[in-house]
Structure formats: structure tokens, C-alpha cells
Length: 229
Image (cartoon, rainbow, N blue to C red; front, side, top):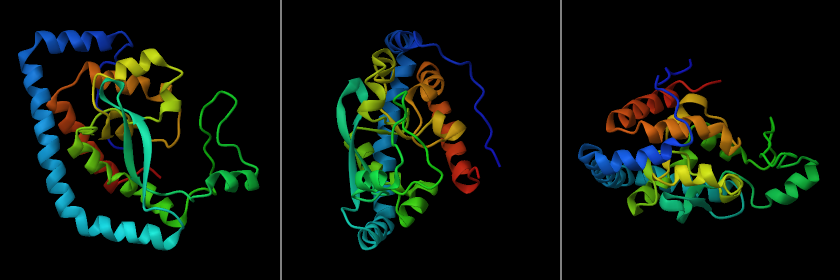
């Protein structure tokens, strides 16, 4: 079952500037941003404590089923384009480059976009389920508590995905990236190009409110319970 779509006007690239003007002009919006950060810290701490036993079990399972560390830290762009280590449970084999060479599959297409494969040999058996259920992203709760991410916001993208699009990168840099967000609940596809996310990311930024965050949270829960097949 496909979750309902948040029906909002699509933002245009120039609207990141409009966002700065909105923040400057609206005391109410500034209070919402402060509240968003307070909610992130409180909810992040509660979630980390509540999920600690489960997170430890997943970490042990990752270590026991494949070689390498349980946690993978990939460099991402965050608020004001500051770089930070985005934490995830490792879902790929440690020797993924060698695996791809042996399989004869390419990781990046001629247009520079990451390629999707029906059976990606880099992904471990456990990693497949961690990704399917979004469990691999749970360590990002630590990123939220540290202030590098938010519970809800644009998806944290790898440097190589954003570097070719500096204007889009600058537009996204006005907000912290999120564990979930508008793009994830509308059209979650793994390893797609940055521009596929542009409309959703800019729409979220241009129309930000705590109510929108609440809608995205509801849709995220619905997406986890009834994922697309």
C-alpha cells in the first residue's frame, strides 16, 4: 500500500533564499526551529535509551555475519555544509570494491549516478533486511543528539552526490539533514541521484513547519508498517 502524499506546492531552487527571509521575518518560525531542536534532543535521548538493547543485538549480529566493523561512518554534508560522519549499521561487505570487480558490475553509470542492481553482491544477507526495514539508519540517533542531524529533514547525501550541484547543495545547507524526510516517505529509492530529491527537499525547506514534521513522522510510521513492494 502506498502511503498518502503530503500535498504542498513544489518549491523552486530560488526558494532557499526565501527561507532565510522567512526565518528573519518570522519570530514564530524561529521559535519553531528552536522547538524542533529541543524535540530532537529529548526524543533522541529517549529513543537511544529505549533502543539500546536492540541496537547492541544488531551490532553483534553484523559483526558475527560478516567481516568488518558493525558501524559504518560515511562523510556527509550537514547544516551550513559542514561535514560530519553519518552513522549506519554496516550493510555491505568490507571488500565491496573487489566484489564488484569480480561480478563485472559497475557502481556508477556514465552520467555519474550510482547504479541499482537487482541483486547487489556488495550487500550482505543481514544487510538486505537492515535496509528493507530501515534498521541500518538507527545509529543516526547519535548524530541527532550531537546536533549533526535532525529526526526529520532532507536526506544526508554523500559528498560525491552533491559536489556537482553547488547551488542545490547551498539550498539544502539551510537545514540539518534528517533520518527521515519528505523524499523518503514519497519516493524512497536507494542510491538515486541528488537531483531526484531536489523537488522534495526544496519543498520541505520552503514550507517548513512543525506541522509538516508531524505529517512526515506519521507517513514514516505508515511506510515502515506497509512498505512498498
